[in-house]
Length: 213
Image 1 (tube, helix red, strand yellow):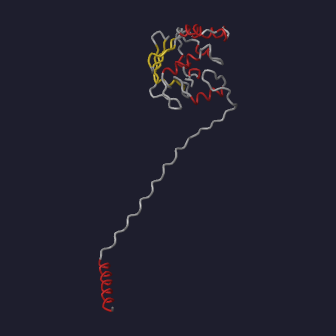
Image 2 (tube, helix red, strand yellow):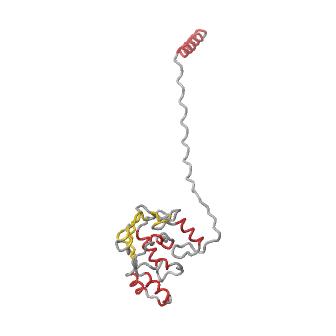
Image 3 (cartoon, helix red, strand yellow):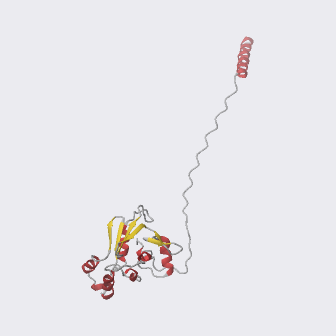
């Protein structure tokens, strides 16, 4: 029994000596820090006070200052006016007039989108200018702004002199056939005027030409 105890002590002592002679223990690598979850995207909100609550927010129907101010914050026309009142590129990045001054061609910027990501092009502005003189669209108070477009006055006169129940869509369609607004391609809008209007670019900056939703 005593012999067994001596052997056990020798084995234990040898193990301690070998452990003491061994190299320094390697440090254990620190556990990887957990990756922080990405912060949720913050919705940025701009709050603007208005004097009175708007009755209607519609480019072809709005008529009072507070409604127009809201439209100018939410929409972009073919062109815009800078702080000095000079015409600058808007949804159209360039435009040119014909030699006789009666045709203006607007080139719509590529990549235009509505608030929901829907692509925009020439057709959106063509629709706005046609809607502005549409006899079937009620509540239009500033259609006279675009009366110098070829064929616009005939459409306006028809709407003014014909009772809503008596309006004929085929007749209106025939009047639209002579209306001077059309797309030559997906990004090019052509506006024909009855006569040269040197300031028509300023008209193109007004809210009545904004592309309605």
